[in-house]
Length: 294
Image 1 (cartoon, one colour):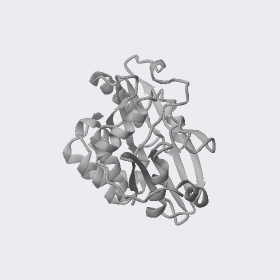
Image 2 (cartoon, rainbow, N blue to C red):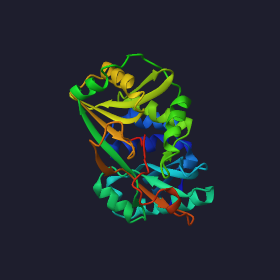
Image 3 (cartoon, helix red, strand yellow):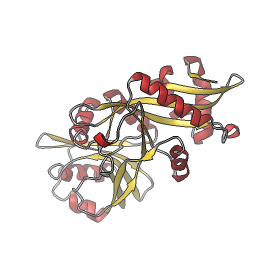
């Protein structure tokens, strides 16, 4: 039976998270205590016990001056003994129906691996979002930061989101988050020791959201900077997270690192309620999904 979750299910939902994602209790507890809402969670129950769950996080899709309402499929999980029975497909179909009733035009998801891309294709999702991946050595980063100034800066979630939207509203099809969504994403990242590194250049802000993969590699999971602000930001990144290699995930139209990039698919979309992809950059290769909570 499919239903909305309720507050009393949080301990059961936390256990499912730990089992399915093989993580300690802390990430699940942070989400369930800070961003969970029963009306944004669907569960499939068998004999009263949750077998499968999907969270439906509100978001928007850039489309000119009027972003379109959408939802993001997050932490979709089925307990191992119940997999292969169609429970997740049923939940995704229910999520689309509920989303349409709420005014959502699209459903967005970032599958964790290639096998899951095939699974979501069966539920009518298509590959849509792309990122550039650019890798810079420490020598290249140092060269970029050569004239940069280390000026540790704090930006509010609203300031970060304003900077983000000033870029992404110009890229039809890109995913936009609320200030609360940004706050949750960055708060969740702290559990994994992620860093939000900010700087200013002549008053102009920039930021990078970073994760140290190991002693040699720093993954810059999102960056909002331009040719005038990248030097100070690079200096701050090196200062806070020293590494031998920096791997950047970038919107497809970013050119601050030249053409030293590989383009790859990074997420899927499904139109709902008869919506068309043509107004949100379909087949342009440009739509960007950032801060996906991966």
